[in-house]
Amino acid sequence: MQQLRAKGADTPFYRDLVDKYMVLWDSVELMIADIRAKGQTYWTTSAAGREYEKDNPNVKLVPAYLKQMQSLLSDMGISPDKIILEGADDDAL
Image 1 (cartoon, rainbow, N blue to C red):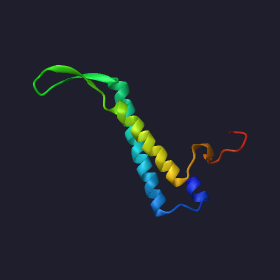
Image 2 (image 1 turned 180 degrees about the horizontal axis):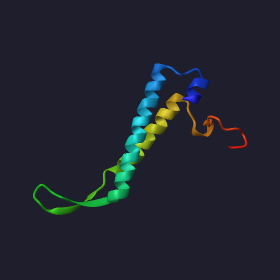
Image 3 (image 1 turned 135 degrees about the horizontal axis):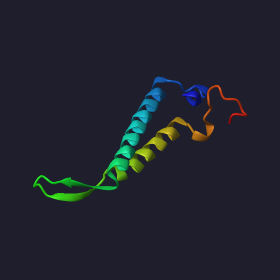
Image 4 (image 1 turned 180 degrees about the vertical axis):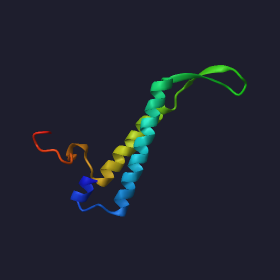
């Protein structure tokens, strides 16, 4: 938000993009937690009652979400290397 304000782009449109970015962020965090808990594959039971090993779909989804997050940052003209820490002085960085 600091970068948007600095560019004079603190508008409803860009705030909406930030909200969408944060939804993706939350989703990625949940998917990563699921991968850590279950692993890249896990055992499950089919409708017929047979156990089988299944690929964790989150392994493929995380990179797609991260790519979309990067796209949103790019659309907003926000760069992680331009992050300004509130209350931090130059020595703290």
